[in-house]
Image: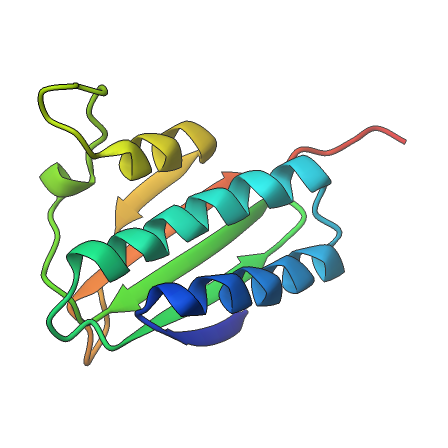
Length: 135
């Protein structure tokens, strides 16, 4: 497990992606798995930055890679979210937004709330089951 911390600001997204990409390369993740996971992780962090204002501060990201899955747990101090907030909704021109959740759920095998841990308000787990290419 590797833990990263990033400021809850848009400028921190690129360096976070570069760090996580490096971890995933070292883990032997396929290019497709890596890109899917990075896009979903970026969306989750962007949601924290956009909607968790007023004290989100840092985002702690715990990354776990195994032969079977890639998992990230994000913890932040922003506004509390709920299962309802996390549920994807179909695009609606009358009610714009919500595409980040839709993308996360489409790209990953699991998106769920977890115990935020001491000192945090929100905990979010993202999981992608890894594909195994036959040799």
